[in-house]
Image: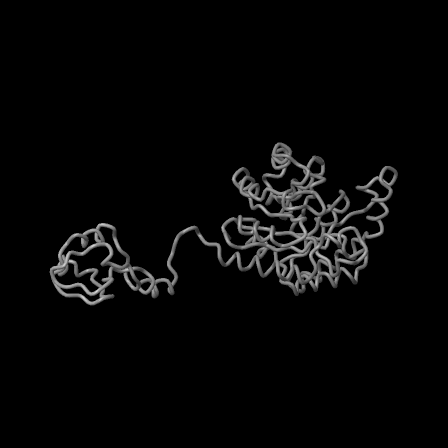
Amino acid sequence: MVERLRNLLSPMWENKVLVAAEIGINHNGDYGQALDLIQAAQACGADAVKFQVYRAGQFCNPKTNPEAYDLFKKYELSFQAFEKLKKVCSDSGIIFYATPLDFESLDFLIQIKCPIIKIASSDITNEPFLHKIAENSRKNNFHTCLSTGFADMKTIENAVKILLKTHLSLMYCVSKYPAQAADFDLNFINTLQKRFNVPIGFSDHSTGIALSCAAAGLGAKIIERHFTLDNELEGADHKISLNPEQLSALVKGVREIESALGPGKKALTTFEQSATEASMRGIYTARKISKGETIEERDLLLLRPGRGVKYSEYRSYLGKKAKRDSEAYEKIQGQNERHK
């Protein structure tokens, strides 16, 4: 599984994109619903599922933000549940990974050998947390994925300095739920890749699949989307998530884009090679021409089939006297000595 993951994220795999269904907290604190979401994501063709793993009291202040604390506490799953979910994923052939939101949850994910540790945008300035991830990534050889919402380039650079010696990828992200097309600059994917020379992904919080597909075409190696069984379910993220029909369409679109991306060289397909002469132009007579007549532009047509017409060759016929009789629509290209 880890080898498959590394292959998917390797810069050498120019055309491969990892599509991740972010379950997050859309299991609503229900282990059975989490299982259903994993099964549905795999049926849609996703390569991976991602969860948020946390102890609510260790990342959200119940006194200053009681509503958020109550929501996260309500949807909190136990470490034991996540360990079982990871095994389910391993047994069924889909990658399990997670965002830890506190040190205890990070320790747990390291302990169960989570192959990717995703760092939330809200932790990009949490340097003690980043240092612990960096130290353990080098020691335990897991992949680190840093989301870049809320952050300008300087903030991203500071975080990357801490994480650079890890197996690192960066996720372009706009931390708005939902985000509109005008909120994004997908060309920043290429900016990040050039600046840091690591795999770049796209954590997409828009409502459709168009921007995710566009990001894949622009070189994103990971596409991460919130995923739900039903957009009408109660909970914080269901309305901004893709449902199974949408996720299936996204996977199909990304796979088609993968097949259309190559090394950047122009090569003719077998069909093009076989159809070239039938599609290109040749020089033909526009009317019946008698020997001795002067050939003018109106006497020539550039028709299919042919092998192309050089301008100098075309001009070489004009103003010359025909040396033989020709019928209308007769190809004269390559026979100019007989017509001039």
